[in-house]
Length: 200
Picture: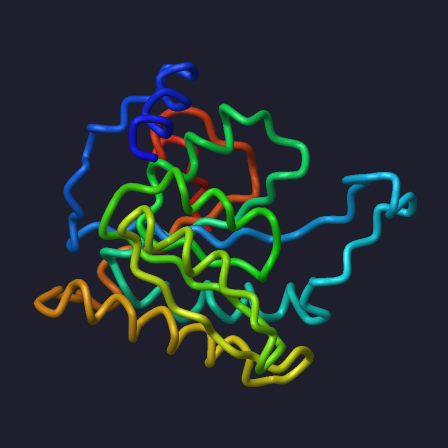
């Protein structure tokens, strides 16, 4: 598997070895949002089903929560209109990958080892463990986060899932509160993770 992954990344001139060791003092969090798109003939309308009804409110709440952590860089984007090279450039620089259950989470196969995947789901016993298995194959820490769609507490639940998992792999992480603004973006990313930020 690792040789295959290296081969794919090499084809797109992506250096997997850069910042290979996790830096707990500077974590890149990436929230993958889902947009309507035509993926196959069985869905000619292009309307997706696994999408949070109050997504904007959730993302706004998460931005506020993570703004208190100077060592966390929180980013938001979607993959539907991005070239595969752009997608891989985002993932290879991601330390914590968050997203609803869906095909986009297969990108966990290209994350660096000892990172985190947070799979959001609204189903208690779906029995679908393929993303957990993919994370395990790639030595990525996995957390399934059960949420209630439309609930006012969804952002708090997602935040707790993320912080819980971060505390497990970065137990000695020093968190500075309010020392610098958070940076977020909805724009395509190519190259360095930090170079594409928009300060809000």
